Length: 200
Image 1: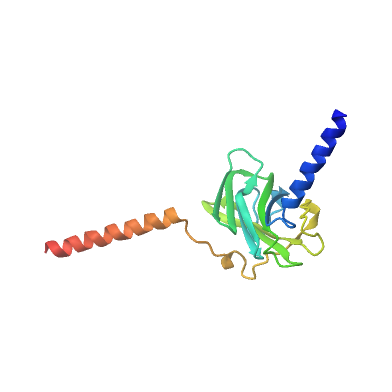
Image 2: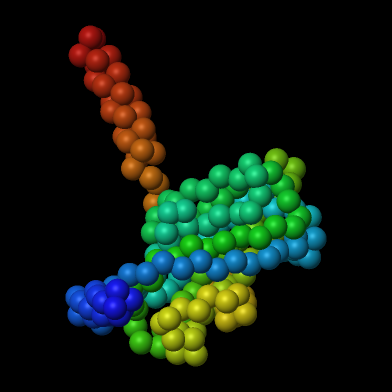
């Protein structure tokens, strides 16, 4: 008798939850991982290890990075979310590693059948200069893999970078703290110049 009562109560709770739950989730989060072996890197004369990764969401609306947006499975690496569509990570040079893209998907904004595209750029410090040594365009076709967003790595295609201008076409905006420091410096210089003119 007790068991039957519990089952009916549980069914009642489940039905009430279903009744209040929306038909579609507005935003959900997901992650996907990519294994890299860097000795195959070949751009700009090639490189043997990566110490900086940059990732840009190229399209579409409805896709942004979580915080953190880009993580690496190695100790000593730090991650920086600059914009909802731009994240980077840096750390000790490594030839073999796995990195993770962590995305927020708004399936009420994402166009039906859209392709999610992310450009990733790989850098190595060579002769004191962070040098681009590899790049990839990662694509996920939501018309083939519907919005349950099964992020099994095999569902992502790898192509040339999606931005036709490559890294030169990516735009980043300084963080508010950087803008504040620059603005403060400009004001200080302006104040110093004005003080000189008034004291003459």
